[in-house]
Length: 249
Image (cartoon, rainbow, N blue to C red; front, side, top):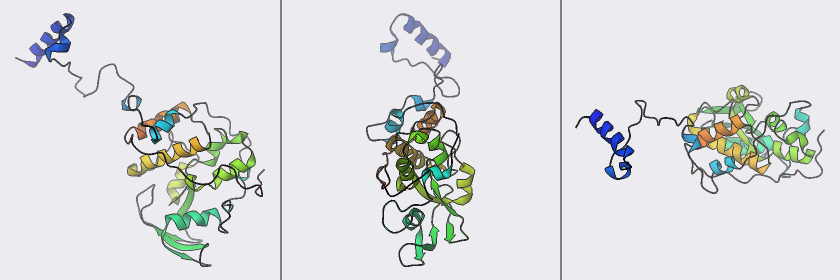
């Protein structure tokens, strides 16, 4: 029986309420998609408890607030030692993320090292203090946070976000600067293999600090995480309030 005749037979059976027991299957379009769907795979995948995808579904969705009055100083002095280990936060992250690390003073001031596989590009990037191609990036940019809830916070919470290891990565400087204050709807790492990890970390930070997302951002996060629905939500980092001795404008 030809394909055309099979299809016609299925239609006839369907009209007689026999389709469910006939063994017939309606064919999709030539492109392999389902007709009338339109929402794409991200709309149909649901995350398990504890997954980053599930966490995204729990984030508050609101419009982006104005950037009015944003200033880096609203988040305290850069790289404050909020964990009281006598090393500034930038050196903490360099020590955590680099290989072959050498120090100026034995334990804190990182003077050289290597990012063996930069998260954003996948490339090997050397670090030399004062001549570095490596930045420490805020995974959720501070300006983005300001426009999605942080402008309403007390200063100690903003300081905590700016220095939380959960929100920080040593990365290729040029990629970081191309990101600017973009969210998942406007920027993703060129290294596609890292995108699930990157978006999962953004989801973790936004959940931990109760930051909201825009609708476009939520949809972009779901698209990425639908490709890795079992990816666990990262945890850890510092408390969401910096010690009382820290101040910010």
